[in-house]
Image (cartoon, rainbow, N blue to C red; front, side, top):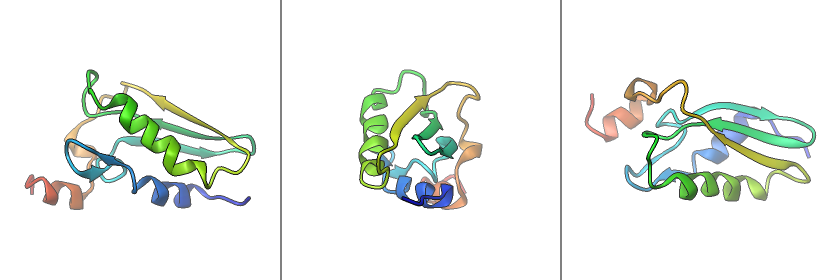
Amino acid sequence: MELREEEVREILRQVYDPELGINIVDLGLVYEIRVEPERLYIRMTLTTPGCPMHDTIAGGVRRALMFHAGNREIEVDVVWEPRWSPDFMSREAKEQLGII
């Protein structure tokens, strides 16, 4: 099953941070997407290290990708470096939150 990085990015726009109501792509939480023959690798972060939504968001990523992964393993790697900053957000996300 052919799958491109940009398609994965669009699928991940369906996963929302439940506290902020903004998708994880526009929040700038997704740092890396790799589509490999045997796995889909997502390197991402959360807005804070102690985020209580850690399992909810990581699970949402897996659920969103399951249908599209084919036989690939889905690996979600939550990292804390680089530390997330509001600067990573898209213009749309900043507008939604009233930052700009």
